[in-house]
Image 1 (cartoon, one colour):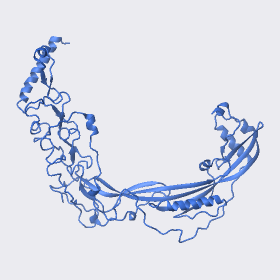
Image 2: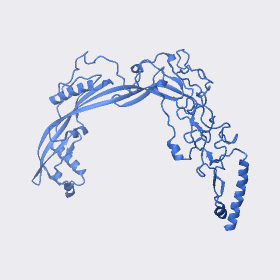
Image 3: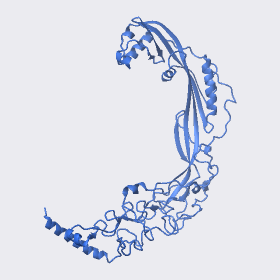
Image 4: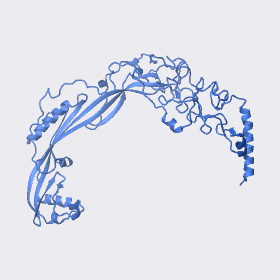
Amino acid sequence: MPNDRERRHIIQTLCDYMVGYTWLKQQQPKMYQGGQQNYPPAAAGYPQGGGGYPQGGGGYPQGGGGYPQGGAPGYQQGGNPPQPAASGNPQSQPQPGAGYPGGMPASGGGGGPEEPSYKGDVPDEDVEADPNNAQSNEPQSTAPPASAFDAISGYNQMDAALPPPSYQDALSSQGPPQRQDLPPAPSLNDEQAKEALMQFVSEKCCYGTGAATNMKINDIVQSSAFHYKLETFTEKRLTKYAFEPYRGQVIDSAANGPAPGPWNIAVNPPTLFQPGKVEVEVPHTASIKPCHDCRGAGFRSCHACLGRGQRRCDSCGGEGRVRDYSNPHHHHHHGPNYRQCPFCMGHGRNRCSSCNGHGQNRCTTCQGTSNLKTYIKLVITWTNNVNDSIVERTGLPDELIRGVSGQVAFKEELPLVWPVGHFQDQAINSASRELVEKHKNSFPLEKILMQRHQITIVPVGEVHSQWNDKSFNYFVYGFENKVHAPDYPNKCCCCTIL
């Protein structure tokens, strides 16, 4: 390890080297702050040809907005983009450069400069090196304003459900279908009731099997629960403005013919009564527009350095020099001694790491292609709307009926169903009338594609039994012989506490 004298010698040697380097840099305009001359420089202050920095400066253009003088190529206020020739062929393409001052690149839809830089003066204000703040200020991709899209007949309403075309009520042309007689309800015997309880008890960790094994069944009260379910499968359509970077893909524009109406576009639904969603491009609505975020330049002002290409050195605070503590004797008698900042080499600024000193970054909206393909997107959503009604007249909770199967006594599928009116229980007939009427009027902005309804007869047995002079009842229900036994007497103490 070097001693103090050797360390001072090393530091002095480095200082001498830096003094010589500083003398060379003084041949260029000085960039120190603190009243020194020529800061900020009239141009960008970059060495000519150095490290990809612009030769005439890296500031904002005249006229503001962060875009080159005269605006971006291809951006005309109120102008229309080039359209394909009216040949009726969807594969026809606009000519590269047509309608765009300066010409549009022949391939890729425009790419912009690979290493962009600003032209103009550097602003007086500087930007501190704060990567966290720079990240939070990064501009996000935005959607073009509605005025940037072409006006298409029949597509004046966006982001809202479109009412389907009126169609004749299927019920008005015919009467209710022929319906068969309903089968008798299934029943439960003693053996089935006992086996069901044994299975139920075996699945409970703190239920004893003694009651289920040795109980005596006094009576089984047979009944049936009725489960009516109505399903209405509907389709909803809405339109949205959409865009994507233009990379030379096919443009199906209005020159190929008028756009079909939203409900005239044929799209096959998924499996009936299964929800789904699909998005499709509306034919003959596409066009090419200059990117609204970068105004067709392909690049946007760097969010970190605000287009300067450089940021204030956080080591020296932009002064280009730092205090030199290598000679405490000099500091004591003559005041602070300074040396050139080793991090910015006396410039007071460092190259912006976000844009690599270019002052601009590739536009995230057009991905650097300068142009966007804009079109109208049709969003189609299929929904299965379900309502049901349960009729159950014992102490068994109604919601348990939904979880079991039974005998399907009636099932019907039609574009529009008729209410059930022939069932043995009038409560089911009444529920069917109410739900069918409700579904008929509940979807004014959706098209009813198909309906179906069914009645399931679920067997319910209320078992009256006795064990050790204790009477208790339980329910056996559904084809699965599920058990509901809240009063089962053979529980351990922990179950009683719980």
